[in-house]
Length: 96
Image 1 (cartoon, one colour):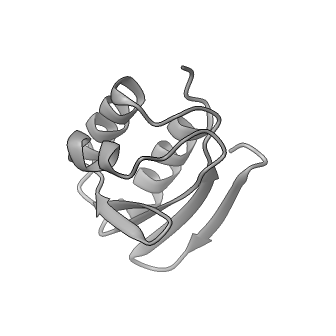
Image 2: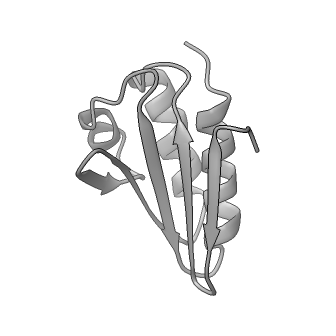
Image 3: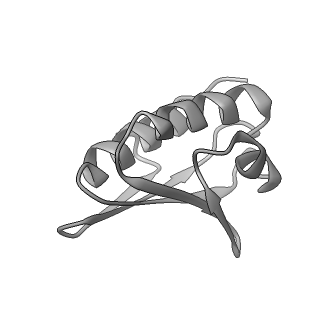
């Protein structure tokens, strides 16, 4: 995981915080939503005070998250840790 990520985990919930290296526009939002859909965990992503379903590319894009924005990924369920790690890694390394 990149140095710009924070990790918090409980038995059924995992939270990761990532600082975006680029804007979260259509292509990275699409990759993010596809990865979220691969997991059984329920995943949300938040920027500022807005939190949305990570499986919806339109909702993820509606966050308006730009480069330098801190986003929080929250996963709950059986594979919460795996989902949160994969999604945090994806956002940490996304390219424009």
